[in-house]
Image 1: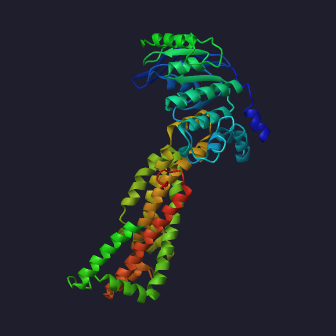
Image 2: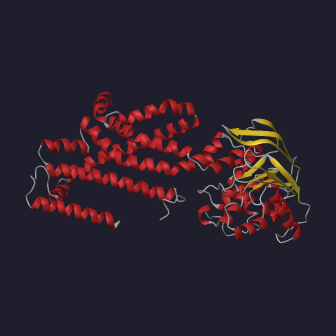
Image 3: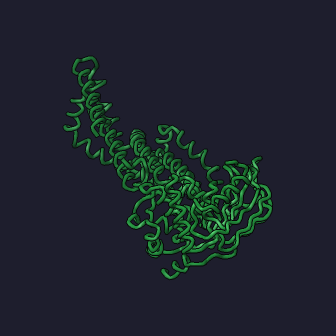
Length: 250
Length: 246
């Protein structure tokens, strides 16, 4: 069982990539997405940026197969979702929360814990295995939530504003460990954020969505080496270009 | 623990003063000291009746708990069943027990069975409603995570909904504990040979007001004791809930 669990969380399970074409999704009279096209190559990290309420979370729901599109097609490999608020289960310890996806996949409690614990040191969670989410800091909660997402062993990770609720300092740290974790365990990643800088720091490409109904305004390539610093000239320039494309003058 | 004791002391003290002053007929309202005397002197009568009533309450509560949880889970898993049964569940609470209890006694006799049925009937509503609502009101983000993982219906119930429903379930159980005692007494007044409700009827007929109040005091104590017991149990089981973190 342990071997099976390790295979699940093994490296380089990047799968096939994501293809979204002409997707439309409405809730009653509210059109969330209209004619959205999006490609994420296997192993690529694509950030989707847009103003609040532009249908970013809806896009992730469609890619994760949580709801069907009204029109258009969505092709995506099996995905694991990291929601905006961590979605940790308050009655489980940090370790059991991280191991949840393995438990759901049928691993025994002991095997799932063992597999999850192997990552605790690297994520700076050692010593907090038995802590309940309510007693963890916001940054630690996000790390547990990300670990749970990673351990699902899915080729695609859908991150829905993972650091939106964190303070600026913690968010900076979170972006660093996310980049490091993905360097260790590559996945195809679709990252939704309202933070243009975060997108430029982390992504291979940045997709800019318009106000509701969400449409793709522009796609920016980020051909910069990692790790990137927010003060780099190229990062600053790309950030300004993205903001300009979104119609935000700075 | 101290504040309720102070309130109790003031209430009992005031009551004693009113009785000592001779403002009320002791036949109508015996003094607390008279009730206390009766509690002690009639302990050979009160004790066995308390045991009988406690048995009815405990078994009735257990029956309500088991049936209530089974029904709530069934209603949760099958929305059609929820729509079909919810009016009946609410209606069951509106049936006046004094009307129903004699019929149940008539059908099941003077023993333990009709009391368990009446207690369960009264207690089952808060259990069903609270558990059913608790199963439904889960963290939407956690639900999205589990749905994206492709969990089965059973897994969502086991990993997400059932633990989420525990605090609400305990709320239902604590409400049930308070009303269970009423149910037992109502069932006993409809027809019985023992129990505190039975004792109250006979003591009333003998104009033994102090004994009536002594039996009532025991009933109140029993309800409070059950409530405290379930609260303590909740603190142990639902140790993550903000309500239980003191």
